[in-house]
Length: 353
Image (cartoon, rainbow, N blue to C red; front, side):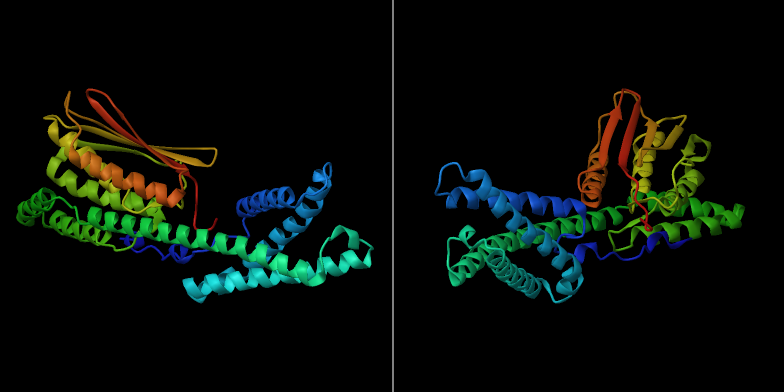
């Protein structure tokens, strides 16, 4: 078996500062900075009719501060995060406050040199003190928000890891019991098939007992699901048919580990196994506008009630997709009296992206 159960480790969970090199983060910082500039302009306005002029000057100053702060944290983020969370936030705070003071001094000197002393109705020391006070308060509030946000993300990650650990432990006892009985029955009549079944079961257990919550490639996930299919086919025979239609999707596309196998298990346990003649499970994938869509559909007995097993596995997968794709993925159900389907939709991401 390939390294389906051993995906490379990710450092995403260790990051507690936003990526200040990303355009989306910079845009948010600039919007917040402009809001601060508007508040400062309203608070400092003394002459009627000068609002727009004052806003333009203060906005220029505050936006430059915001852009330079993003540049500093973009370059220093990796080093800051290596110092530890508490120390890292303190270092980031001091870096930004010093940057604000340095830019305030530059702004003061430039204003004096070009004859704009009347634009600053304050002494040199007063201007620096006011800049320090305002910047320290704003930066402290921002750091506090980032710290709380980081702790919240960490708790979400820990909860997701606990849930996937529970899912990995949920190889149903009836599946293990039936598989071992099937292997025993094959030992004398078809020893090669029995040996292959033991290898498949070992590979499947290895994949299920993996302790990480990383994403794996679609090719690796497909292999794990294929192993499960082969084992179940030994027991169900021709009653179980699976139509794989994933050729349109890139094999290197990433998705949360243990996605297809639990859905295939649900389709067999709640659908095919309940039908005397069995049926066909369809696993179809499409790619459009850099989004992947995977549909897993199976027949089921008419009027079958949705079981707890369905709910638990689907809720687990839904939460892990939410965590992995930050709200850009969708997990939904389509069901009728005699059919059940799960549709996964998520953005295309690869390890090389």
